[in-house]
Length: 124
Image (cartoon, rainbow, N blue to C red; front, side, top):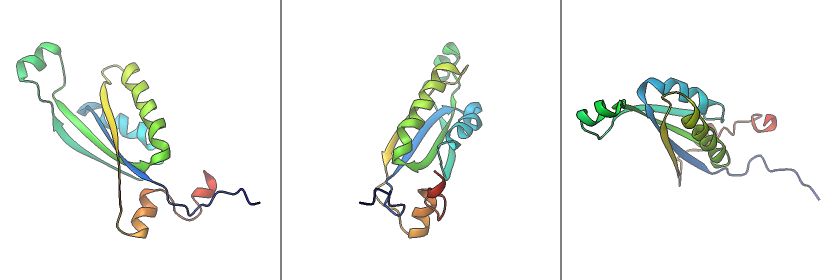
């Protein structure tokens, strides 16, 4: 009986959203890159609190929203790592959540996003 894993098996993808203070975006991009993320995008965001409250609490109103496409089997590990960083990095607070991607158009795009290029899976 052959117990080898089928490398061509479909790997589910998720879109991980990470919201952090804008000055910390580069740090969190680096943190997420260790989880085989092949696509990341950063968009600017603005907190909803009024300026007096932001000033009173000493918050950073300018946010970075990091969008990361990753394989479903890496998401929990990535979120645990992010949670640890949110709790230990000075001014490193943030939130993260993931949503499933139900479809991707094109085999090559899927292979790129799932990090399933020929030869890559053998080294994991």
